[in-house]
Length: 207
Length: 207
Image (cartoon, rainbow over all chains, first blue to last red; front, side, top):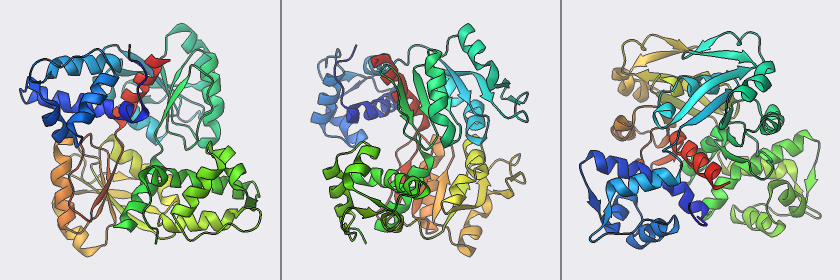
């Protein structure tokens, strides 16, 4: 669908999608690379390069079709299909993700939560029961799962990812402060909250 | 304290810190740039360049002192001083951050939570009362605050940041899906969870 897309462009795709959604809400139907660039803090030529790199979307006349481009980028990111997500770990982060409506709104639906703590299993979070991790294999064999959210301690994340990979899960949203080592075909996106806070601390000191 | 440090290096600082902490736990006292590089998936020369760029730490003999380097990086990031944090928004994300012990462990202490919802004010989250946002000005004038966590809807994040900046808050940990426009001297670190999930979706499709 898309050819080689650089990491920098990949990280910008969601921002494109968000800005185009906002433009749609504002009733804007066409936008030039210059105006989109000003809005996104990029140059017009960067905008054109980015959009060329994920391919298949031409510029018509005086600019891009806002809806057309938003739909195209959504398609490139796979946002036009639903994703089934399970959460491993019913702690604070796991609970917050399960309880948030915003992920479901963009097509990522939490279908199950697992934990190994008997005090947590049996609890319900936002209408989803927390199940014993012992039934993970049975659950995943019966129901397709696209993404596993790893909201487990650092020491358990790698082995949990391997266990899930064996069950066919290929996408990991990793909140544990470790860099997962994954086999080919599996991908992880890390949310390292501690590290984000440490970077903020550094930037404050630099000011 | 540090001279110009590139964005890429800044983002790697927490990983240095984390790996050096792990090495300390393993009882390693000295490490070469080659061994540290292998561990961190960087080349030895990248390691040396990075460490030179945040300055003031020489290589002794056969390698770096693990504790010395960890302390130096901690100091460069400001992790050797405590940070006082307030959370704006007592929803799922605000609650998860308040309830997490891990941020306090690295020196970021939540001292107050604010919300504008009368149903939330008066609640206690992990021993911290949720206060009415109306008392924000009084609170911040009486107690120093280094960092504000913005766990508010996208539509409120910018005006809330401006309100806090006027009160002297310079550091923003922003969970709202907007790019804040801040005056000089203020810094934000964004955690865009929706976007992280969208990037994961893209990467899954590419596999």
